[in-house]
Image 1 (cartoon, helix red, strand yellow):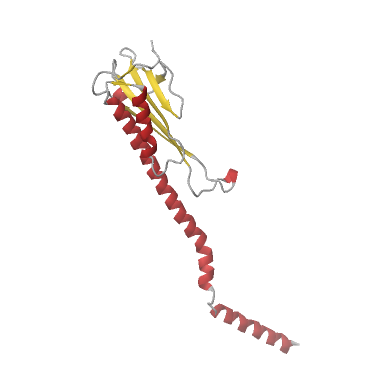
Image 2 (cartoon, rainbow, N blue to C red):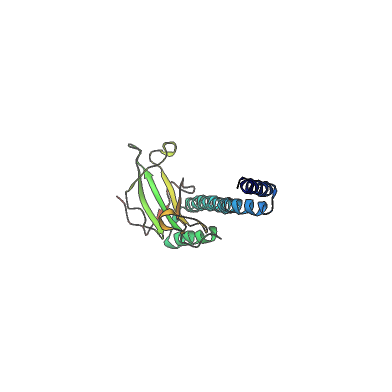
Length: 198
């Protein structure tokens, strides 16, 4: 009986030594472990870089809208509609959802330095209400002056993503930007068909 047990022990040790020396399938095992991590890094890098590119386009679009309107001394509904129309072209190739944009003129009260909306127009969004108070940076709060304010919001949805709450559904990120410019041709940009603010 002890001879049989010794033989079995020797046989087990031989098989164990052979298993330790056997490296067949090691590369496949390592590949199976590393592949999901590498794919996650690859797609994550693509989505982050795309998100940064979209955010940059939102910033450029916001500055462009404000800049175009500030170059005029007066605007009409057609002018503002044409200005909003460039939004889709500027967001190409990411414009699968509509861009929400607002252009407003604000007046800074000389005594209180409170900025209030004098007129506002929006595309795919609700315009700001007349005399709505707007927070502006202290550096541009010059009493008795007007500013053109443009606001853009774009809902960015990554192609590949995972949301714990909704399984394999990509989350949506609302990218937004706001820019102020001073009118260049006159002290303010008149918009004749806008509701009068007192």
